[in-house]
Amino acid sequence: MRLIDTHVHINFDSFDIDRDEVARAWREAGVAHLVHSCVEPAEFPKIQAIAQRYPEVSMAVGLHPLDMDKWTETTAAQIAHIAASERKVVAIGEMGLDFFKADDKALQMKAFVAQLEVAHALDLPVIIHCREAAAETAELLRSFSQNRGHISGVMHCWTGSPAETQQFLDLGFFISFSGIVTFKNATQVKASARMVPSDRILVETDCPFLSPVPKRKEKRNQPAFVRYVAEYVAELREVSLETLAWQTTCNAQRLFRLPGELVSSEANGAEI
Image 1 (cartoon, rainbow, N blue to C red):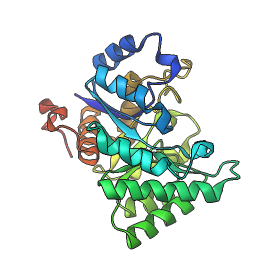
Image 2 (image 1 turned 120 degrees about the horizontal axis):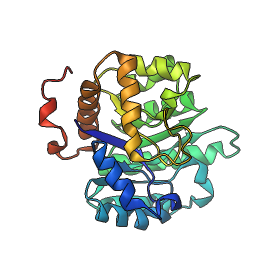
Image 3 (image 1 turned 135 degrees about the vertical axis):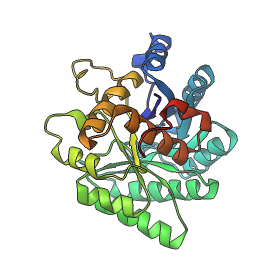
Image 4 (image 1 turned 60 degrees about the horizontal axis):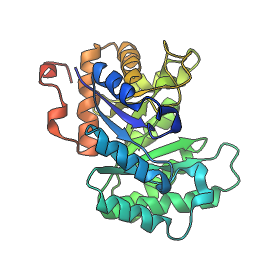
């Protein structure tokens, strides 16, 4: 059985003291590949060094909507240059809209569309952060698709309702669940995790944040803990862990165009 953690931030300082041990733990947990997201282009050299050290790490590059103070007229070109010049970049992101206590909505939307343009030009999927902005995010994606062409991607660390989830499924997006789905009061997230089709569901940690049950007391989440997310989602969907792992690995491989050998041969009999 193999798993793919589709969203990590192991470049953060909390991993500097024991990153090799963390890598050993994710390998022991069956995590065959990781997609390392990016909060802002300035952190990309460190992410790149991590991907060189650990061959199973792929990368994204983008600007997070909570970092609009770093957006300039050259940021999109910078993201495009990095993505085009680094073969291990598999997506643009994380990017999107975060309207929780936001006073820069117009700038967020401008940066979002500019990064969609980069992804479209390079034929790369997008990793989308969306908080308190589902309707606006869906409308921007719908408009972009109609006016510019198809864009693929994932709604990462998804917390939306089933109705909101359906909007993004209708747009062709994948939906990724983090440790939040294991939280006691995450009722609508659990409902969304049950309804996503088996060919569109992904799992992630979003580490070092959001440690899942039963690791909630650990302040630092890590990629090995994606197994707990997968176990919980499998239980919600009434399938085996092996089946859920097979489905999510196939889906991540397809979305991010990852190497085919990531899919475990022993899972070939799993129900799709």
